[in-house]
Length: 241
Ligand code: APR
Image 1 (cartoon, rainbow, N blue to C red):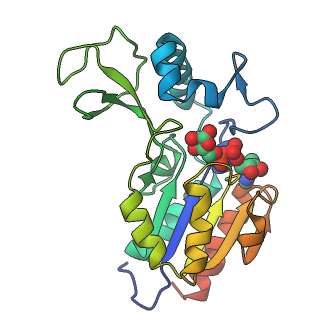
Image 2 (cartoon, protein in one colour; image 1 turned 45 degrees about the vertical axis):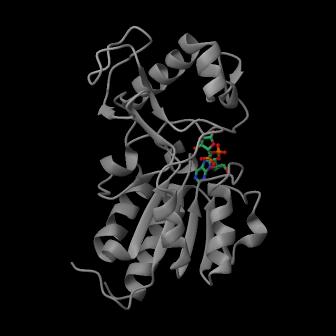
């Protein structure tokens, strides 16, 4: 189906909450510690410099967990893939998640602003490589044959990816929805404000109201696997797609 020009431009931002029902922990839940380290402690360039083994182990563990049999996309991921089929380029899916559950759910265009778990990056050339296994400071980089591989993750203090494309889409958005994100981490947490200033209708879909709740015109509260398919079905029937 080709996208109808009269459809609204939609920007969707997802966070850890959309993958919670797929068996992946969110970051800021009550026991959001890993071997007694907060995520912030293992997700910085400084941590990688000071204790690389810990950082490699953290991402190796998360990469392995992502590939366990019981980690599968849920109804919310599937619904967003269905929306993409109906809306085509009128919709942009931006995720803060480093998992591949949107892709496994059928989404073809996903902007991973915080990088990807199933990818390794050469710290020198910045080339990226699909990577499913563990790697560490002894693993040879495919491009330079040196030991320069780092997780392909945007750490705290680094600049997220695709910012130009995302700000461009936000400037043209008629609708913005944030799904399963607490609104604690910038720049993603600021997208709602930008979309709103540009005249977009803003929607929050979360288990509980997030920190920026007041900036949303509409708020759906509940598990993503229930509220996202509902929202998608309503949108699809509204535009008779
Ligand atoms: N359905 C919907 N929302 C849910 C569900 C669910 N089943 N379970 C949890 N949530 C909500 C929580 O209430 C919380 O508001 O998802 C949100 C998850 O928030 P965070 O753990 O802070 O995750 P996120 O907002 O994605 O974090 C942003 O911070 O640690 C960094 O780089 C990391 O991308 C991450 C960024």
